[in-house]
Image (cartoon, rainbow over all chains, first blue to last red; front, side, top):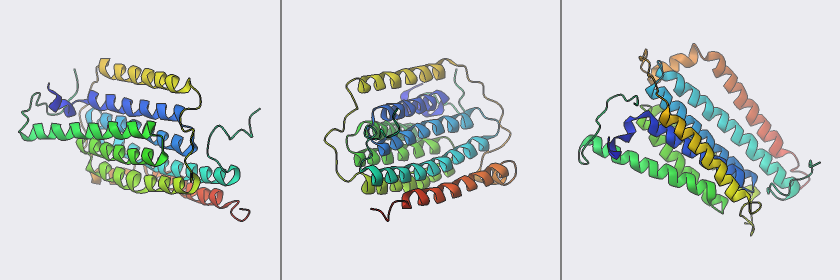
Length: 108
Length: 183
């Protein structure tokens, strides 16, 4: 198999899903702001969705189930982004910052 | 070794299959470049632009996975809705760029990279070493099938996800509105 044929194999999609997930984890750990962490979480969700769609295409008996699952992931991601961003805006109004280091009111 | 539908193991570059493979490589490059920018860029606006590029590449992946419908939804929901919402949040809640925009301390960059590399290595290794067994297809997975499933077998989940979205919208309005009069 040459590099031009890799789109026909399940493993390609799994590896790239894992790569996106790992990029998301890296961003989530190193970001300092709430919005940056949210962007990284969206990357992780995209990696997971690619996995679902790949298994759906290559392995699943009924190929609509994985698509429906990915659709629900998108809906939950939209809800999560709306809530997360409104929390970020609320935090910014209250503390004048979205830096995670400065949000220490609940620290023991 | 790998389940594959119609294997043409070595297409020439100037055949239709070869051009398809070339487009797939472009999609991979888009996705990885965008994801890398999104995870590492200093400014949030650049990270957001990286996410837009990355999600467009992911939509291309969905097209290759026999699902133009999901590719369309990916562009519509992620690129069109979520990224625009995030850009509004960046404009509202991060007006001035901080000087200290790197990781929190010296260790968190390398440690984060280590954790991410471990996760990637473990999952990619698992994907490469497992022998995946495909089942016989019992349906086509067309948009019509998705619609029938959504209104029959998954109607309860469909209702619940609508409720979750409604509550999220109301909650977002309530949280973002509070405190406006004080400031």
